[in-house]
Length: 403
Ligand code: FEO
Image (cartoon, rainbow, N blue to C red; front, side):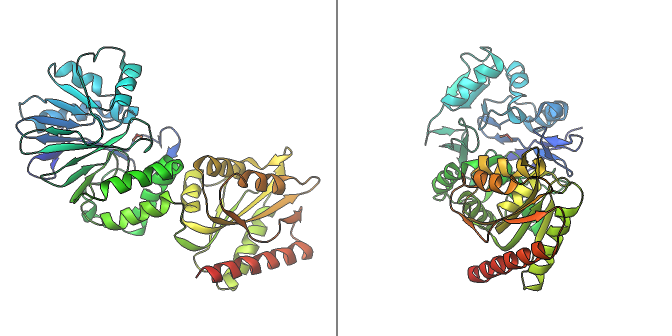
């Protein structure tokens, strides 16, 4: 059963959604599935824009057959060589004997890594600014290294003002009958899945993302066709602003995110206490996460959103209780910057998590510590409540000063 959709008269969507997969990249929960996008541009020459994940190969074949309408493709444009987009290359190359693969030099090397030498003689290497004419349509190639792999490129189709953006401007979630972003709207729920996708997949590469944004700023863009998520036909200016903020590690929400780990409920109790004190001091939109209960990708996403972050963890095996340690480790690797951070630790017979959390976070740039490390001995008592009151005062003052 095919499922194609025209975006314009000559650009056809041939991707598909997967709702059976539990985790994208076997890491990130995708409760609303995942879209794998591919497109056909039909002109004097025909170009297929990337392929899709192997689990969707059959429907992809049906979609292509429908979109090609008896013609054979001349080019397969490979913007990105990660397997969720490249596994069907082999099938297409075997099926369409005269089709050429168009990709960067770095992608060519990866083609060899994934598929051996079966594509020899069929690759056209392109560089920054090269143009491939299809007839009335032409594709200008824009290198976007490390967004988020080294071989990545975008392409811009000038006649219909379409940007093919690889993983950039992608999101988690299948397209539930609404392929265009204008059909669902750029609401908070939709933006949160753009943010979760960006922060976890591309978050480490802010500099490179920014470089690519500067390159595409000169183009008049009507549609953005990413490899995941909706086709962006509205709100691209809003999403570009979001991307610029995320890529420069600029917080969006001047409020407080509390991330805690709790083995027996006592650190959780302290997190709740702190959150209500902060709420009583006028802080709005506070968010509290139990790092053991929610997948860290959601927490990472909100770390890219919130200006003030409080980490609260017991000492465990002379280290940081690992659900919280996992979040901090990932933030380090993603290179989060420019945050106000507070630390609370709990210990019954040993401390150390607080100092270690600070040492880990010291490796991130421009971290401003708010308040002293608060120590809780087993359970909240008058002393630790007072210390949390002082900490809340410091955090609330910070929030006020950032307004
Ligand atoms: Fe969707 Fe980086 O692959």
